[in-house]
Length: 313
Image (cartoon, rainbow, N blue to C red):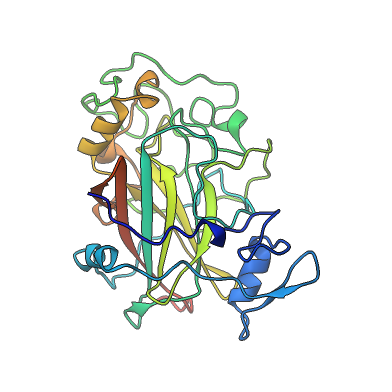
């Protein structure tokens, strides 16, 4: 079944193209516009424009959020070692990365009012099928150890294999990547633990940002994330309100679906997976996306409940 939304690819913004097709703005400009009463921003060509939010939410997508509705404050996590402002305001973040198509729909709510948060900026970023992060391919090779190689032949390491018994945060196969969270309860860590990365290459695949619509929803088109040593399969997300980072978190996937996806190309050649949901030091059940089949891929939805005024409630 295909859960359709309006596919307004012309609403994307990159360094070379504004949503309306005139000039360019980056993430900083977008954040400034969303925090301004008139919502306008001046592009590099000197024109004044109003960035557009994600297209209106279709009924079938809204229905998927019903069961996932929550106004409990979403757990904050470390941003990890591979975050930086990629300056990519766009819906389709795949570029040339192969993999199983995944549509990601995120609804952002105010944790105090239990109401949608429109005009919030949501960023996501994740590794590719081989476990590499754009902008940090050298660092992320082998799970964050520069120059390292991904483990092969680790117990339970085949795609879809059984989680290795007793492996914690990277048992067989190594330790978590440098700068990754090191212990604590699921969902632990704080937004300030890791500094923003200075990119070491010019790649920007699997990174992007969008503006929430009146329903508080953004949607991205990406591929199913791969994995790297010491971590389960995940996507990073960050929510900005009024130019402030109000939530940094992660989302995870059901292991049965990970097994199914990883049995096919291009994932199947990346063997030796060492960390599954039950042994990941960030994972919490509340971070699981609700997944449904969507044409030749999947659609995942999740609610983020953010403390938009950052008063701790």
